[in-house]
Amino acid sequence: MKIMVSVFYSYLYLFGIIINASLDLILVNTMFKRYKESRIKILLFLFIFYIADIILLAAEMVPFLEHFDNIADFYISGVDNVYFYIFTILGIATAGIFLLFTDYFEDESISMRNAIVFVVFLTSYVEYVAYNLANSTPVGLEIPNTPLSMGFIPVIFLLYVVVVSIKGLLKIRKEVLDPVQKSQINRMILTIIFYYFVTSNLIGFSHQSPFPLSDETTLLLRTILPKYSIIIGHFIMYRTYAKAKVAFLSYQKMEKLLVISKEGLPLYSYDFISSADSETVNILLSGGMTAIIGMLNETLGTSGIKMIEFLDKQIMIVHQANFAIFLVVDRPSSFLWNAITIFAGILERKMIFGDQTDSLIRSQPIQADSDLKIAFGL
Image (cartoon, rainbow, N blue to C red):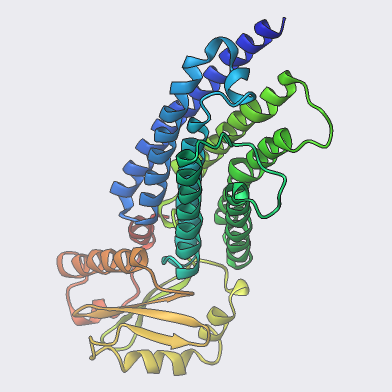
C-alpha cells in the first residue's frame, strides 16, 4: 500500500514539475517580450530568475527519476543527499535574485546591504557544503537541532527575503494612488508569500514537526505542497506582468505633466492622478501657479537644466525648440526619461508637420492625450 501511495505521489509530483517548467518557460518568454517592448531593466531580473528556476528543476529531475518508484528513499531517508545540497544552493541563488528584483523595483537601484547579505549567505552555505562533502557528513537537508548550526542558513535567508521584500512593497503600496498599480503590488506580495513563506514553512514543518509524521504526510509536506505553492506563485506572477501596462512594469509615481511654449504659455497638461490626491498638484493648480510657472519659464532658454527639486518632488524637464515639458514625479527613472523624450518628439513633429506651424497657433492649447498614453505606456 505504501509503495502504491509513493508511486501516486511520484506521478503527482512529476505533474507538478511539468507544470512548473511550462510556466517557467512561459514567464521567461513573457519577460523577454516585455523587456523588448519597454526596455525596462527590472524585467531582466525576472528573466534571470525564471531561467535559474529552470536550472533548479533540471537538477531536481535527475534524482527524482532515479528514485521514481520509491521517492521516500530520497526525500525522507536521505539517499544521494548530495543533490539536496545542490537544490539548496540553487534555491538560495534564486531567492537572492528575487530579493534584488524587489530591491530594484522599489528604487531602480540595488542596495549594498541586500547585495552583501545575498553574497554572504550564498558563500557561507557553499563553504558549509564543501566542508560536509570533504568530511563525508550525511546531513542532506535535515535541519539540525542546534540553533547555531549552519544548516539554518537557507531558513534564515528565506526569512530575510520575505521580510525585506514585503516591507519594501508595503512601503510602495502606501505611496501608490492608482488602483491598478496598487492591485499589482498586492499580487507581488502574494507571490512572495507562496514562493518563500508557504514553501519554507511546509518543508521546515516536515523536518521539525513537534509530533511524529507518517512517511506519506512527510512526502506531502516536503514535496507535493511546496511544488504546487510555487506553481500558484507562478500563475500570480504571470497575471501581474503579462498584461500590465508598460508604465506599471516598474514602480513609477507620476503626478502631473505640463507643456509650456517658448512664449511661456501653457499648451498642454495631464494629471496622472486626481489633484485631490496630490499636495504638489494642489499647489501647482492654486495660488502658487503663477510663481511656479514663472520659475519654469526661466529655464526655457537654458537647455542645461533638466531637473528641479520642489518640496519632496522632482520636476523632470525636456527642452525642445518651441516648448518644454515638465513632469512632476516622486523620483526620476530611466523609463520616465525615455517616455518624456518620446512624447516630446511626438509633439515636435505635430508642430512642424501638422497645422500648428506659426507662432500664434503654437501658443494655443493642443490635444495630445492619446500620444501621451502611447509614450508612457498607459
